Length: 445
Image (tube, rainbow, N blue to C red):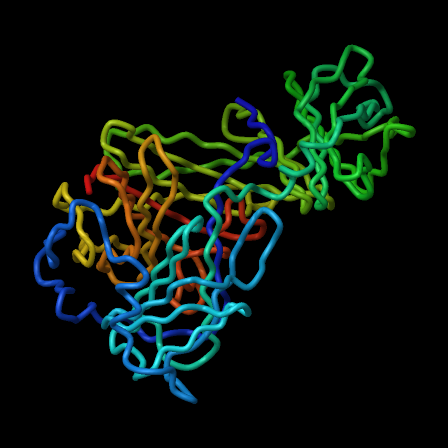
């Protein structure tokens, strides 16, 4: 199956911050935060799903804001329109102090830096974010993503589409039939994939901001017995000038073999996919051949390997992603094991979440989402296999999905990830190698 370009699907994203390396986090230690059992334990009284309101949290702040507070920073909102300072966001420390951000998104909380490096930020209409083990010093910027945030390119879909035509030709200049073709550019233009006719011609329905393509890339991959691959960059097109001429392809003369180690998920079949990807984000999956995939050197594109094993019944998934050179010959993909835990099915504010450590991980992301409801509501990041549930607002009683994800990727200190907005882990991440494994639990509030 050849997937549609990512910009065809509106998706929730997770944001991040780059920065200096933080120290390894200790466990949260507070009056209601305890990590001394290998399961989620109740550390606060149940409140029928009605958690601490911002006004109540602010009442715990100690006196007026100091002239030079120890805990300060800013909160940035990530919406469909981009990034902007977020006023009125509640920022709390793990030891119970809190403050609101001003018009410039800045916050200041008096008192010392929390010993366990725990902060949580929230505001209505945004996904609440928590971070554990954040060291003092350096810029503190927390990113909150809007619950309805769409991928860039979604705005382009509102524009009236137009047709881009052309022809795919092989190395001898002859037309290539049954080749898959797609267009995309960094400004948000995109098309659905189409196949070429017997004369090699294609007709792409393109959505683009301002109904103009300024510097797009067209990818072409053959679906027949022979392996042809091509990428043409610098495409300019509009409704008045929609024919882009010939797109050349070359033969895939090298074989890339993939060896998968899925021992961490016994009995779960692994699916392997190799994509041809451009810097613009255009991508096409290559057909698998006996012995692997046929590839070729293309200056305008690179290859990304994805191996995934998913067990829907158990709520587990493990994914391996790597950028691969055409000359690699062979890639060995080892999947991470999903986090294991024995969780209380009823969740309350400040309950301590704990799970078994996953070998090979570099950090953990925890998310809470309403099942059949408002989508993602809270997320957290920690380098240790434990953190408290710290959502600081009203949540209605009901069924929720709590997902714990182990990540193995570069740049996963708490300060670099900051508030579990892993922009560094944006999928797909161009030029990035990563592994992740997740397990979802059903909980009620």
